[in-house]
Image (cartoon, rainbow, N blue to C red; front, side, top):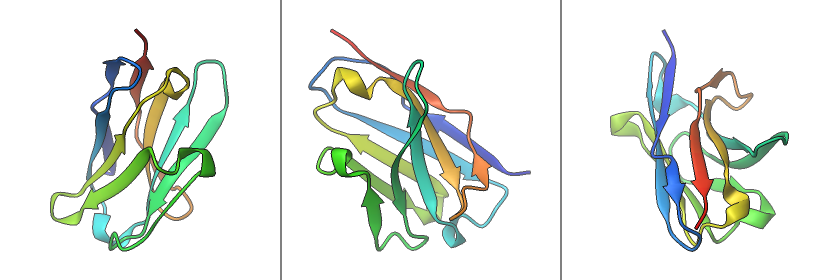
Length: 115
C-alpha cells in the first residue's frame, strides 16, 4: 500500500524558516521523481518543485527560486522541503507527490504564516 505522510507544518512567523518532511512507503522511492505542490486557501493547486530520483537535479517555480529547497534522502524514503524567509503568501496546504506524472499524493500538511 502506497503511503505518503507529510509533516512539519504549523504556525510560522513571517521571515522564519521551516522544513517539511514526507515519509513514504509502499513503492520504490529511489526510482521516483518527487514533487511538492501547494494550495493556498480558496485558490487552486500550485506546483512548487520537483527532484530527480537520484537527487542530482531539481526544478522550482520561478517565484520560489532562492527561498525553497527540495531534497531527498533515499535511504530513509523521505522527501524534504525547506522554506526560508517565509512570507504570509506561503500560507497553504503543502502536498508531497510521487511520480513524474504525479501518480501518488499525500494528504498534505498545513503551513500558516502569521505574526
